[in-house]
Amino acid sequence: MSDGLVLSDDAADLLSEAAKHPSGAAFFIESNHGSSLSVGTRKFIEPGSARSEARWEAALHELVSAGLMEIEGSLCSVTERGFSVAARLKRAGMTPPRDGDL
Image 1 (cartoon, helix red, strand yellow):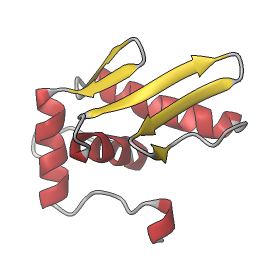
Image 2 (spheres, rainbow, N blue to C red):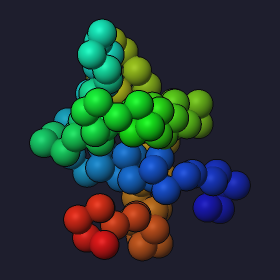
Image 3 (cartoon, rainbow, N blue to C red):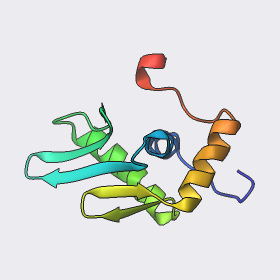
Image 4 (cartoon, rainbow, N blue to C red):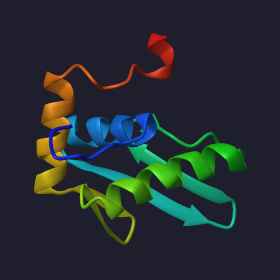
């Protein structure tokens, strides 16, 4: 990207999904049974998979560290900068395909 920001494919995928959803947000819930990360009806973390949980938590924290999303409770909202970056990713055709699209 022109501002030197480099995102992992997972972070770009999560940001793109959240930015295109009407709520502009993802939901992240931690419990004794594991974590859940979703945007609309799409669930990112595979239930019972520690690897999947670590993967998507890392993507979320990458976005928060870059100032592209903010976490308040279980709500993870796309920031103004996040919407701008998501729009640039879309224009550049850099949004990764979903697993079912491969």
